[in-house]
Image (cartoon, rainbow, N blue to C red; front, side):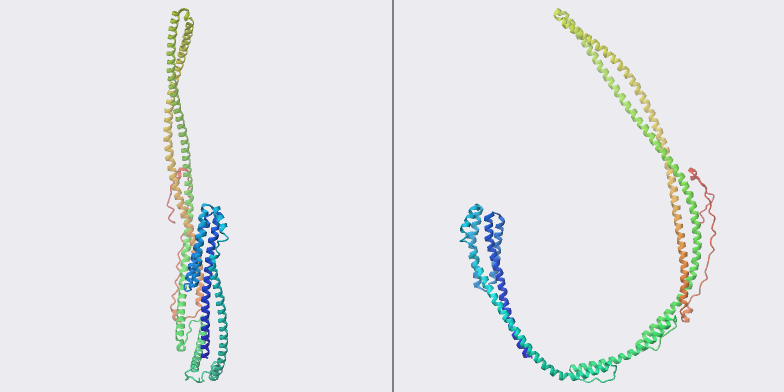
Length: 596
């Protein structure tokens, strides 16, 4: 069997080596095909982008032209590295690269340079050499190399298929041989192992039926059968110990069940005894727990009595507190009503004072407007007086001009008389000018008299306006004093109203606190009643249990309920109604806040 396995391993190792060798050749061939395609695509890109630049003249084609060159160079470098140990293949790659360089030197770069100068001429030149100069010769070595690698890949694939077929045949033959050897070995092993195993199986069936006194054979053997026999011996001893433990456990469960039944019947005087050593801790813990529970229930019984006594005292105290809270609430309600009425009166006084301040402010504003009007009137009268003086000066100037004109006309008449007949016409004109000058002088004197009369009246108006302004200033001063007095009164009334309002708020807060205290007292009273009921229920539940005499002796005696008589509730005193400023002087006959 071992020889068969060695032969199969040798055959498989040889086949795997052949597959690995062909896989390496195939992988390099695939890489070579990929890189030759990249070089070919790069060269074709140079050709197509050069033609695109000749047609359009766009610089983007030149960028693609140079990228194609870089792509071809990069892929060619990868091919050279891939064929580092194959000189013939490297020679083909170098031949293709040299042809590509010649094409760029002879065709590509010159055409691009020519197109930069004259694109149409470059197109014509390309058409002329297009059929004779192509990139097909450049790509011929690469394509031949790619075809050769494709043929090598097909041969490697055929070799792998043949190796796999040989491996399958070897595996099939080896499997048949191993199956035959295994069948023969199994027959021998069955004869050597079946009888002891059948004997151990019967012993295990007997153990499963509960017979723990049988003897286990073959425990002294050193092989696997001996180990199995010793394991069966351990199983027998463990089964015997388990049977004894089950019996002890059943006894313990019976005793514990009986004790729990007594506990369910409220009998805490039950104890456990006579347990095996393995259950001594359970016996001790159960007895300790029941004893502590009995002691705790005795303590609870005594505490329940004390709680009942304390609850009764709390109930009496809360009733007394509730009565006092009601008395305080009634007194606070009466005080709040009186303070509210006083606050209303003071607030009315403050409002009236504020209204008076408003009236005084409006009167002051009216007087100030009158002062402004009088001031503007005096200003206008002063302007009129200045204008009258200016007019008088102008009239005096006109009077002087009339006098000069009259004098000139007189001189002209004298000169005309000297001239004789030649000056008669001029004498007539001089006479008319003299008459006109006299009328102008008369009119100027008349206007001057009227302006003088007007100025006197304006001066009288100015004096009256000044007297009116003095009277208005006196009125303004008086109104200001009245406004200050009324403001003082209003401030005092407002302060009194604010103080009384604060007192009213404080009384309201005290009333609210008293109401809250009364509500809490009611809640405490209800809680006391509920606590009393729950205490009675607790005592009834605790009294159902039968406890030991020591726990009964530990119960504290009940305390008597101490009650206090409720305080006498005084009759609320009626508060006198006060209004107006008399609310500030209300006298209290006696202090009625003692109960608060």
